[in-house]
Length: 115
Length: 114
Image (cartoon, rainbow over all chains, first blue to last red; front, side, top):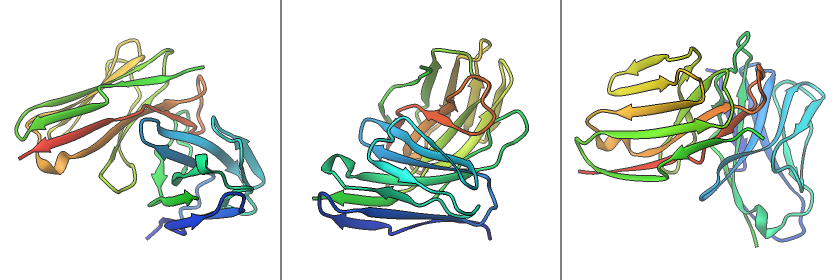
């Protein structure tokens, strides 16, 4: 069955370290997204991609970067982790459905703690 | 920019009572989606509404899209403990967007007492 997987599921790191969260989907979806979820803020978009070699900034992109070298993967990198980046990170993918937004398929999330 | 506001933030109900969450946008939405997230889980797609005034039902869940396509609601009849979770609405971030960049409301966290 097609799926979307994130790794690691849990990570503890120190301030200033570089961290990469992996996201891999097997639906062959062109659209991929990274959201962070914090109490009281819901889901906020960090970066997104509409296809290979395409990346775009979301509403909370500072301190994060992504790259899209193939259809299946969209890794999220925190260049220099900060305590404010302690959060649960969700990767999602979707396909376009004609004129309408396709439903998002979410991974199970990666819980990151920055000490 | 366009925002999607959702109320209430929390709702506690006795099992068997009804529950409603409301979603409002500052601008017209081409469509709206609803997601459910169980405690400790990830958001799962429930439904998409596209047409003005549209009403869709899934068993005890009723979804409505306003006539002006600026508001939506999710109503659960006779809640059960399995309904526990956070319900999110989400609308396209860009006017007329077709490419899935969704803005999520902050969600309504539903607790059901047995």
